[in-house]
Amino acid sequence: MKSSLLMNFSVDKEKSKIKVEREFAAPVAKVWAAFTESEILDQWWAPKPWKARTKEMDFREGGHWLYAMIGPDGTEHWARADFQSVTPLKNYTAKDNFCDSDGNPTNAIASASWNNSFSGSGEMTLVAVEIQFEKLEDLETHIKMGFQEGFTAALENLDALL
Image (cartoon, rainbow, N blue to C red; front, side):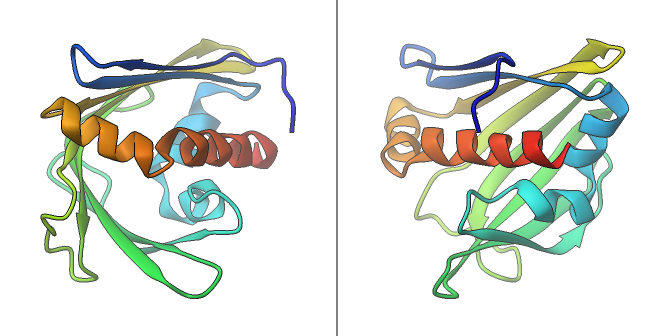
């Protein structure tokens, strides 16, 4: 789907950070819900033909989201986001880890810290995502895994859903 809505994806290797800005033609409350409610996340988070499936979701400061990315062949890759701060309709931060199906972190790929900000007026919302890695090697591993293509495709799924 081609869109005239803003989409910026940048990699700052000096700071081991990825920045994504994505605009959506929907009010902030609707976009916020899409990022914070598992029933909606499961509909768009995974790039097709993959699917996302939530096992547990407790969206609050100190809570977490445990979910699987499921491939077309049934392969499951588990991840857990631990929510560190939540300012409703404005911002939330989380530490993201690959894990097993019980939420125990695996050390195969290092964790990353996500800062998700939401702003807008009327029917337009800008989501700004900053993903901070502990070291450049961790950022490069995510890029090699196809993170840019996968996250971009997932955001396009959300655009279609909204």
